[in-house]
Amino acid sequence: MLFITSTARVISFAWKNLVRNAWIGLATVLVLVLALLSVNVLVGVNAVTSSAIKALEDKVDVSVYFKAGTPQGILDLARSYLASLPQTANVEIVSADEVLGQFLERHRDDQKILDAIKEVETNPFGATMVVKANRTDNYPFLIEALKNPQFSFAIESQTYDDHAVAISRVREIAKSVRYFGLILTAVFILFSVLIVYNAIRVAIYTQREEIGIMRLVGASNAFVRLPLILDAVFLALLALAIVGGLMALGVVFLEPRLKSFFDGADPGLMSFFVANAWYLGVVEGVTLVVLVSMSSWAAAGKYLKK
Image (cartoon, rainbow, N blue to C red; front, side, top):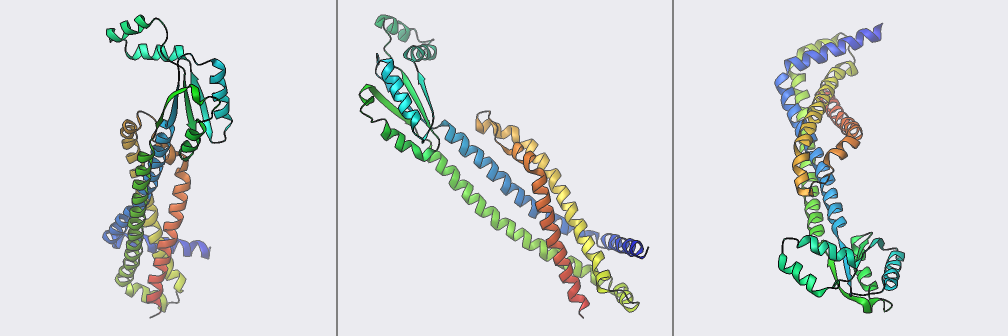
C-alpha cells in the first residue's frame, strides 16, 4: 500500500512539474526531436545509398561479341570456362539469331537498315556472351580471362559496361553524408543533454520551496529525484513518438519520388524502415531515456548536495 501511495505521489508531482514548466518542456521536446530526426535521416540515407550502389553494381557487365559463324562448341567452351570461375556470378549466351532479332526490333522504323539486312541475305551478327561478376572489382580479372587462346580467336570485340566511377561517387557522397550526419547527431545529442539538464534545474528552482519542505518532513533524495526523472523520460518518449510519426510521413512521401531515380525499382527506404522499425525504436528509445535520466539525475543531485 505504501509503495502504491508513493508511486501515485511521484506521478502526481511529475505531472505538476510538466504543467508548470510546459514551455521549457516544449523546447526540450523540440531539441530531442531534432536529435532523433538527425539519427533517422542518417540511417535512411545509408539505406538509400546502399540500394543505389547495389542498383549500379547490377548494371555492370561485360558483353563479348563473337564473330559471325562461330561454332556452337566454341561458344559452349567460353561459357563453361567463364562460369567455372569463382569471380563469375552469371554467364548468358545470346544466339546470333536472337541478336539479329533484337537488332531488327530496335530499327524497325528505319527502312534503309531493314533493306540492307535483306540484301545481305545471311545473318551478319555473331552470338553475344554477357558476363556478370559477383563483385565489381572482379571485372578486370574476368576481362583478362577472356584472353584464353581456346576461344579468344573467335571474339570480335568486347565492351565493359563500367559504372565504377558512378559507384565510387555514390560511395564518396554516402561517406561524406555519414560523417556530416554523425557530427550533426553528436551536436544535437549534446544540446539535448544540456537542455534537459537545465530544464530540470529550472524545475527545481521553481519548486525549491516545495522541495525544501519535502526534505524537512523526511522525503528521501530518491523521492525528490524520481518526479524530475519521470518528467524527462516522458518528454523523451513524447519526442520518440513524434519522430516516429514524422518519419512515417516522410518515408511515405519520399518513397514514390525516389523510384524515379531508381528506374522504377525499389529504393529500399520503406522496406528498410518497415523491417527495422522495432529495432530502431527500441535502440533509440532506450538510449534517449538513459541519456535524459542520467542528465536529470545529475541536475537534481547537484541541488540536493547543497
